[in-house]
Length: 557
Ligand code: DQQ
Image (cartoon, rainbow, N blue to C red):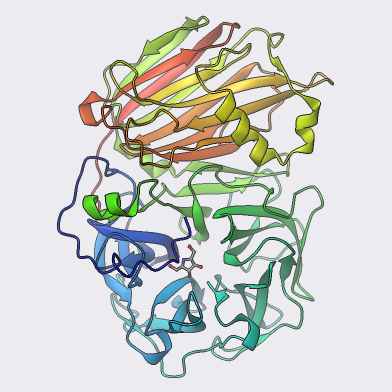
């Protein structure tokens, strides 16, 4: 849904009622109203700071300011007043997305996009900076926008496609940062250099660009350790062993993709390896509802953390009626997979402190058509971690070799739509039924199905299918899917799902493939929600180990 559409009739409708029915409990969100992109995450003097795009009036996009919260664990949040709100000629029509950079001497600076005119659609964009009014306030409650703003104006051809400054990095005596843009259908990340963080000059060549990808929003660029090391790196780290990640959010498809590559620090160019697809069919952090993501380096725990926004799948009218829209997904640690081909992601371990009442299952067989309920936990607010084993791969269904000609994301989604959890298979479908109603009128299955290619390789499909999630017919109910890059030598597949009322965030195989679904059951609500494990393949599956926890509710804004 292209939310940049302004809904004049909706954007200033004041929220009167907040419905808690589908409101997530442990995912980041304000008390009410609309949020979108994560902005400027950082750590400062004992607190994690988080900002995001926020409509202070109502529950659809519009009137955008930077909401601000602080936390000591990124799970419990204290709300502060919005940090950046339209107040000057250079941001009168909106304070759009941006990033934080910590300058030497522990001095944070925010770069953000200001909208100075409403035309041309979606607005005339410039780049601004803001600095703390009082560096000794660990909450950084007040921000100053100096009068020498804007620091960057667009060129004639990209006045309305010039936004979302990245975190800056420092090398060869200068600061560097990226701005998302396009030229017709060519997505572009422009690189700017500065010695003083105020006067910026555009590099002659874009940092990276790609035809037929449309406007690049929220570019993110960072180093990752490549030595099988989970430690994150500060954005300015430059070493021979380091690999780089470059991510863009595609306005046209509302998906993101990332590549892994090299950084040419002399010419300030990004060079993706030819082993990763550079285009909309590239790798995704999340094959479901996930957009405008941004990472930051956590200097305390030496890790890189990824934040991503999950929009609602409900209609504008429904959002206005419930009084809120948009959540941030649980912050994820990201690091390089030992294969070097992709990243791995895992919910930050601080989340585990919310785990309460617990259920365990071990060594239980699931034969074709079996479902088993996991009782004793609050299934609408839970964390489930399960590993499935099987003794043979022989029954895996044939993988049609023509499928390889299709973009893998489309294929995965199509297969999940056609071969849902109820369609019997060989090795799979097996997995969990989340947010299930008592008599299974509603449920959101998260499951695996294994295919065998002609060269005796296995293709593992992961699905998170909202088709039957709700008896409400108005919602968007996609069958999200992604492939999981494993060889199955250990004949085992593991899955973790974070279930939180209207969000199911699922991690396969230690974070190789991740899918988030937003769903709004009518019956499987609160204490009427159930959790099951199931197998609908002819090959028996063994639940090697399942642990499920009721999740407690943190302090949430
Ligand atoms: N959201 C912001 C823009 C950004 C878009 C406006 C991405 O800065 O390009 O709310 O979701």
